[in-house]
Length: 290
Image (cartoon, rainbow, N blue to C red; front, top):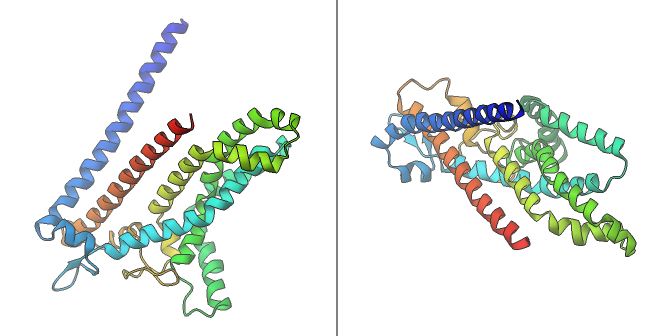
């Protein structure tokens, strides 16, 4: 009986795995099909390197380089802000002896991860953007930096949760030995736990970066949505924000419509490439540590 249930469980898991892969394949095929038609009028190089986005003009221009740069810029800013804080939180949680307190902090992080992105965007608009306008007398607080700060808060739970588990295992492994040798907890965390968690830190960074690149609503509300070359304290527009703002008004089958699908295709290819690259780096790093 147990073997029957085990075989049934394996079959069900296999079916769901095949369905998941099939859905991903269909999504890629659909987006690719809707994207390729634009290259009858515009070359791929011109599309990704063009500086002007105006598909409704008499002479349409569909260059998305500013949006590509803004997407990477705001994601990098978010990861740079959240990664040190997240790794510090993960170290503290890993070394926290009070299980009840650890459970409370973990629950809080779960709540942060579950808050809708529009709420983050609303708070960012009223707090972060307003802070830049009133404190630094900016003409507008909507900027790449505002988007990066909001995104940093959003991706923080993913960094902490990804790194904490590995750090906890390392802490339990070295705790008794370190105490027997009289090594302080802070030194153990710096010299033993942190180096052994390089793979987990890299994984958390990949997850956070991918999450930040795909975020739409929160960034759209605080970044200014101007299709210009981005600056840290200037406005910009990410690819997800571009698609969300304009897909509802794009005529079916028009250059505008296919241009938005192609922008989504470019974003998807960037994410697949980056995840594959980071996976290879992590694999090599793990083999080196072992």
